Picture (cartoon, one colour):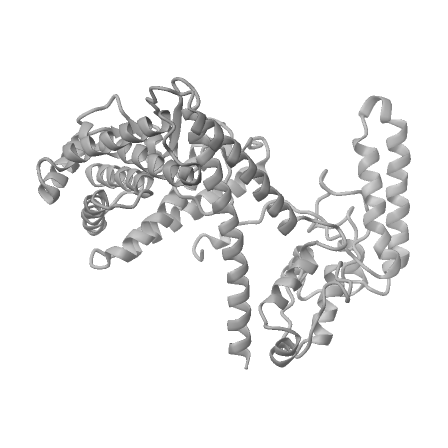
Length: 513
């Protein structure tokens, strides 16, 4: 019944993910609502709109902007865009009037807000189309890498462009209030694809978020530079593979692949720019959707509306309640609510109860009653309680390198050379590591005596750190104390120290990823 068990667990984890995503979506919705209310409460206020920041509204009647405008006129009629602009403006004016005359019922203020927000975003879309606005020169990425496009790839992009232009024309007639930002993104993508076709070089929108973190690269470290060059080659190869996979007869698949291309090509362009200019590199671990914000002016004739003030108080209370809910749902506690026991709670919640868990998994583990805190203890409980068919072991990097580089060598000589941090050829001492002498990850029986030596070695660093404290700060003292902490488990036959290493060598993966 392994398939049924896997399906049940997958469903449980998917449900947990969906719940977490809904909490994040609600938080974003509350923030967006508050942003609009804050703008309405100020004279000369504005609304931040995702996608608006891609456009250069000084560049009117751009070549493709006019082409897209003509396409929509042919699809929807000559007066469609203008009539939509008039209707949208009239409705916005009516809502402002209702807001300022205090005729909005308190219970409907959020519905009022969502309609106004949607109309303001749609107005921004119509401005882009009627003006034929082009993209900002900072919106596109890809020119530095010059990923050339052949005739087949240009045919694919032409089919994709037509599909997206049709999507824009269709969405313009939608009654959905949240279509504005989606339209701004699709129109910007049309501009990017058209630019790729015209110059026969792959371009894509900048996918990095506005508030993303940055990191300065250590350009003087040869290991770091070698790693980044390999990573750059990997990203380029992956981008080219994705372009090849696109198909002119499968537009939906090509559209999905293009969103992945935006992510990979965006990271490639960012890394290439940083390596070329010596600038910090922007970081983003998650999947990115291009969303550069821009400010849309709010022309509210009377900012001091009592309805807006009341709505801001109500929304503030909702935000406080939501924050409290998030803290209660996702709070962390070292013993009672950590990554280990929360993982088991998700497993348990996948089943209707203990009986179904015992039926499908072979047993039951209670996060509280079984005192789940330590990952190794959790692993042992899984092996003894559940019906485990196979255990896959992934060795630590040093042990994997030992097996790869010294497969034909064994015995005390190998251990004396590779088993310590001084003479090892596989490990180089790093400032990120705590002070230690001996590796104990593959010598269970010898852990207590070797751990005692490691403990003494770290203690010597603590003493030395005390003497250097007035001139060198507390870094060495702190590292010595951490070294003692990591050595303590070895005294009772446990090992948590593996050593840290430089970046992984990616050169062998450039053809496989």
